[in-house]
Amino acid sequence: MSQTNKNNSRYIRYILLIFASLWVLWPISIMIEEGFRVDIGPAFSGRGASFVGEFFQGQGGIRFTTIEYVKALKVEAYPRLLVNSSIIAVSSVVVAILAGLPAGFTMAMYKFRGKTFITYALLAMRTISPFAVLLPFFLIYGRLGLFDTYQGMAFVYLIINLPIITMMMRGFFKDIPKEIFEAAFMSGASDSYILRKVALPLALPGLAAAAVFAFVGTWNEFFYALFLTGTVTKTVSRGVWSGFSESIESFKILEFDELNAGGTLAIIPAVILSLAVQRYLARGVTLGAAE
Image 1 (cartoon, helix red, strand yellow):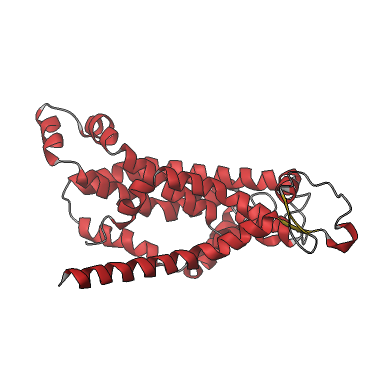
Image 2: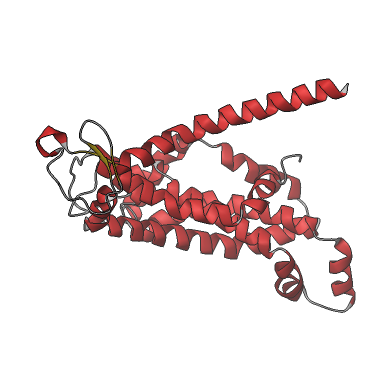
């Protein structure tokens, strides 16, 4: 292939990536922008109305202000939604790490019967439709009293996060040179010692990426939160969708700008954590794909 064709191919890829990025970011940018916009109407336009954090006045009675973000944070139920999402996400990710870390290490370092089947089974779990398992969850949770409980929601997301963390850590452990583990084995170190003192420090960036990937997925998850949470464990994704009000038990149709502000605030933790480990996220989510 000539240099000209290579350059043309590169430009085409860049253009496609730009369009794909715009397609993904467009609704998010609309949400953020609408959260800053307030239509004060002709009755108040030009009459010196005071807005908290006002930084720009547009045409036709439209002001760009942070008042909707302040209003969202002042709603009593909204911080509760954030706390619920944090409790559920953190607890499910911590348990998934405690189980997935040794599982990933075992699958990366040892050969045992059924290893290939387990690998494909873990990968296949990501393809199961949530609709297929929703009814069993309803029946089981109804009998065990786990509906609208923190432990019930954490268990759902544990099932989702455990295969992700296991496969990601398996890939990161396989990237570590085998000579390091062989030297540790020759010195008489136990398996648990090698995992804690040798493998884990070397794979710590990968562990952080796996934890963030699972946390962000749990934080943003909507389907199970819609059907398995109630007034006690309602998450921020469901709360913003349904219209959070002064009480988490009640329903209220809020102004569109206020809901957009609440949605923007909800994505901030996920964005910050993703940016912090973005170097390892892209590699981590593709590990094991070739197998």
